[in-house]
Amino acid sequence: MHFFQWNDSLSVDEPRIDEDHQVLIALIDELHQATQGGEDYLHLVQIFNKLITHTRSHFQHEEAIMESINYHGLKDHQLQHQHLLERITDLGHALENARELVAVEAAELLRFWLNSHILLSDKDMVNAFHQTQVIT
Image (cartoon, rainbow, N blue to C red; front, top):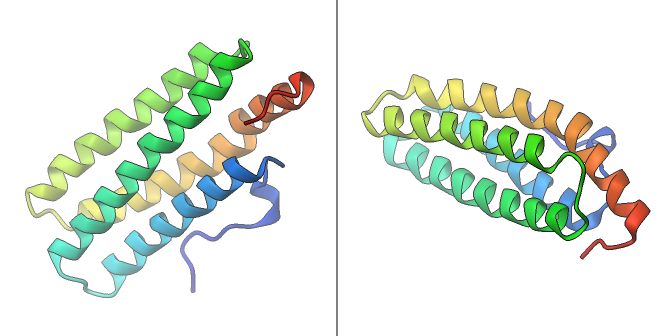
């Protein structure tokens, strides 16, 4: 059974952003599955690092789009991104100190955060994009 799985309610109707979100969801699910399957510590760290890397890349992409259209919610959206990156960076440091339970906490945090972020902030952002016809 999946811990976190893509569904149509999470679509923001922008293929590139949806694709990024699908990768993030798959990585969160993979991280959680690895904690449940007794994967070794190094594998957990590898998944976690892929997740952080993809998250940063995705946030940069979103923020570039927001800047290109002078999105009204840019600052708030950037703060949401920044707070999550700070939190998962802290969790990454804890994971490096061999606290495997941190991976479970990270997966739960990221599932909750990404789900609500997509449904609220990202959908609003994409609506603004569609109004300006500037999606790249």
